[in-house]
Image 1 (cartoon, rainbow over the protein chains, first blue to last red):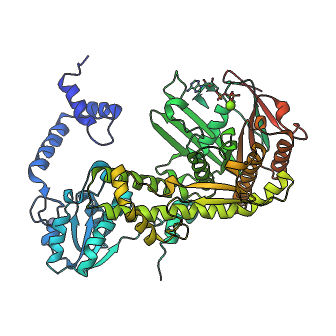
Image 2 (cartoon, helix red, strand yellow; image 1 turned 120 degrees about the horizontal axis):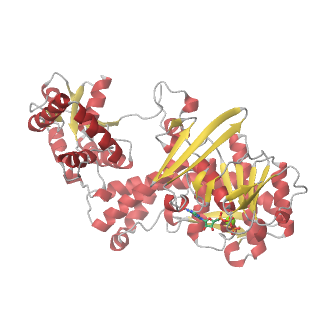
Image 3 (tube, protein in one colour; image 1 turned 45 degrees about the vertical axis):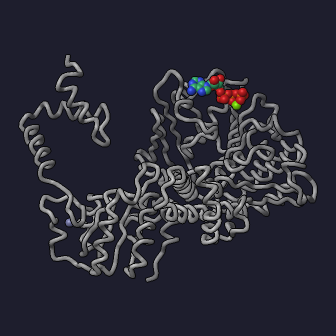
Length: 197
Length: 357
Ligand SMILES: Nc1ncnc2c1ncn2[C@@H]1O[C@H](COP(=O)(O)OP(=O)(O)OP(=O)(O)O)[C@@H](O)[C@H]1O
Ligand SMILES: [Mg+2]
Ligand SMILES: [Zn+2]
């Protein structure tokens, strides 16, 4: 039997550091990897490559291999800027193909409980971008969590005085869902936040 | 049900009106009631954590139930494991708690509530939160949000960091106003009922009132939803808040005052008057839910018969009978159940966590 100070034990420990991976999943993944050495090599190489090549864009702070990133240098609408918490939020909005402006990634949200202050987010960098005067509308797309909403409010207070329009992503009933199956709290919020047609 | 408290394994098929759990002290009657409440609300009415709920000799507990309403059958399954509570509805797991609520309305009535009139404000807030939640499913989310914002704001006050205080104060004020608004809407919804039921129970023409108290914010227009004024009031106590490192005003400190002919029941009411008031409150709550949802809630009565006199007992049971509700009652003695007849009741005898029918 393998000892937990063995390389296998170390692999388990490393796997368990990943979000959503507990003891059982770590074991399953480890045994799976053992069965296909070729895949393991490819995985290990891609992991190392990612850490050596991927970095944060110095303009929008999304992840990229080239700095500035493809979105920052691409042909996009300069007048609208979408502010999100994390790089994966950029991916989500890009997938929707509904937004043609540029992005700014805060790399987090305000959270006094975890000691996150405004200076730890990319807010100064955001304000410097806005001071250039090309942006006419900031779309705030932080999460609809307590922290995301507070961040949205904090930014609104900073940006509005610059005479820039500030908008917030709408939230409500998921598309394709029957009203009767949507939970009451969501329906209530959607009703309160209803919009003019 | 499996490994829930002292109940290792149990299976019951309740009837659609009165169900009585009876037995000596400490046999598992309240535990059984608690499991039903947990299945409907994912919370324990005794504020217990998993550690207390899972049988001491087991690592997980399971409760499942079949809910039938207007010919629609739903399966609810709850697993308690570690700190987690996982719920499945019709075989599908749910990711957001709020997807679940509204499935089943439940009202619990325990000796705890009978004594809340005299107790500390937090007992009345707990009652109020539970009552509002059972008739307003969106309340839970608002309450969670408020509690979270409050924690953030308190952390901020302790840290002494100023940069984001205004932001959190505004978020706090908005959440506070929303929470109070829903509490007031509930209180308004039961107001007439409380009055009418109180007169009925007491056989008097006394005037009763519920008065919501928001210390330090009464002038600030908390009740009328004036967010701007609430923010101002918060700013005025900023110094003190910083010094003490916590938020000093808001619904987490509010209270309800019960008034009988204009006098505070807490200070001047007799025990009987206080109990009649709580009974009237419960009856009004049931009637309110029935009006809102078109169906009466399921009622859980934890051994209240011992706390009420004969007359009030009968009166309350009569109310329940005429409302054709599903009721679960615990008692040490069947003779305490003041129904005209126990014939239509299902009776379950509990002994050492086992159900002997
Ligand atoms: N996690 C647990 N594991 C095992 N036993 C438990 C657990 N939690 C509570 N118990 C036991 O369950 C027993 C029954 O409790 P319960 O509150 O249901 O009694 P009861 O029948 O309502 O009694 P009473 O008439 O006194 O109110 C208690 O003796 C208690 O010690
Ligand atoms: Mg009991
Ligand atoms: Zn970029």
